[in-house]
Image (cartoon, rainbow, N blue to C red):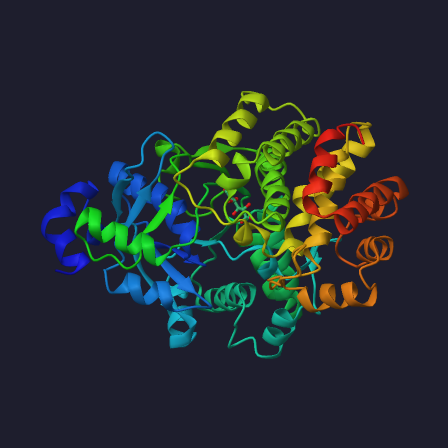
Length: 492
Ligand code: CS2
């Protein structure tokens, strides 16, 4: 029996609503694991509770793998929730997704679907690098290879930014109105950055179009949170064994989930506020909390853990010295936040440690280590700059910066190598070679790279020196010894 037959025959009731009764109102670009464990679940809840034509049509600009699996199941899939309280996961079928279109089948059908006026929201999880931004200025980087290629053939976009602008251009010409573009990526002020990228790109095509978008489209900021490992063959097998469903696109995640959104939608939205989404006027304080505490600690522990031979976050947390460093990181990063009414940062930090420890979630350190050149700014460099300005401890930030630079060498202490998996990989790797692994030279060269550190941090010689000292230790005595020293050195 196929997955969708089974669901249609006996599981439909478990959904609490009939998916086909609801038309598509959202197109989501980047319909990967995280989207399906987060925004699709809130939308599923909102459809069940309050109805509306808000099903989601996914768009995948890269791989067709999830699309093929999901489309064969009428968009239905299992959400597998793993708590730290029980080894037995909970299963739930999600009906919010109408299917996924892929660029491999041609961009025109995707554009045709997106110009339909019934599409009122275009949401995105495309990862930090796909915004094509110069992070120092927040403006579109016209030299970004994806962006410059799309600007040469704007009718056949390959990037998310190019696609959005192409669709908005056609909607303007057809009188179909604009939509709300909802960034769900881990970037501070993600809505404003998306707006800046879209307007910067549109400006290159037609200044009138840029003006029309600025007047008509909305770009609310969001904070999204749910720890979601990538799908594995083991998960597919386990889902089949425990549910009897041949589901080739299940997704596993933790029980915790949070979504904070600036309530600025031009043409309606699902009743997300009725299913646990926090609608606020200003997302920035929530986003800073999440990026600096959760994601900052994640990056630090991912590099330190990966280089110490730990494959999963839960194993890093079992290492007493590393888990002490994680707790210190969260505490130090908390000191960089302005108070936020209704939020107890200490309780949030304690809950984070529990989430990282969840023994039933196999979240790879290598997955988190990916794309560091796009993540370090908001996770480490920004709170470090803040800590320096207010005169609080920076020890964990210098250590996190050093351990990321250590990771850039592409080899463990043993000499065994790994791929960096970073969009700036070639540039970073050649820097490591030209510095011949000299820690002082390498740190100085990384600090001098464009579009990476904020100028005030790059020019701070004390910060640089501390990073150099950590890296020197790591290279001279190995990771284990450098980690032990860092853990004993709270006020460095
Ligand atoms: C992680 C995030 O991969 C990463 O860089 O830090 O994906 C993290 O798991 C999510 O932001 C949790 O909400």
